[in-house]
Amino acid sequence: MELKAFTQLILPTQGRLFRLAKLFLRNREEAEDTLQEVLMKLWSHRQQLESYQNVEAFAVQMTRNLCLDKLKSKEWQSRAGEANWEEVEEQKVSPYQQVELSDSAALMRKLIDELPETAKLILHLRDVEEYSFEEIEQVTGMNVNHIRVVLSRARKEVRDKFLKIQAYESGH
Image 1 (spheres, rainbow, N blue to C red):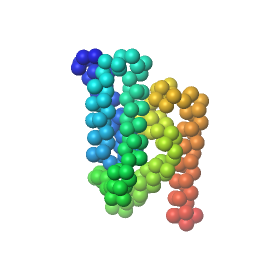
Image 2: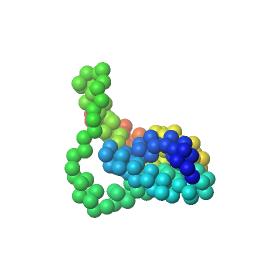
Image 3: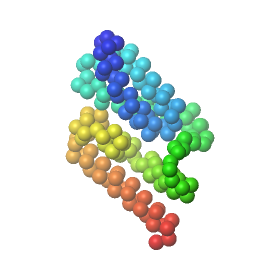
Image 4: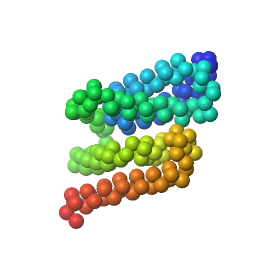
């Protein structure tokens, strides 16, 4: 595979791969590093890429596996205690609303992070990346009906926990 074919095939997926890495790693720099590693591996194996039915699904699997490997590493676990502050976007809302929105977003991220890895991946691919069920099937190897069940349960679990915490905090 030549450079032109590789860039046409792989580069359009960079944004999705980066967001997936950021979902798992919760760190922009680590996600960028992971994306670069994936792109380097794909480039070094570019001759075999044409044999894959869906190269994007292969790249997503590779990104997911690399992220999970990083999360399991001792070095990553030793850094897990460090604060990881996200950049706060300027919004045209009051400071009170900013705090409230930030708290809700942080709570949603926390609840999604608590999901099992498969549920978290399926939820991200479907609701953030807007993959079709067939594309998710290619990435995960699960059948469409099972994906629908996992997605439904993940959404319900996040929604129920979110509403329970919100009700508790508002005193209802």
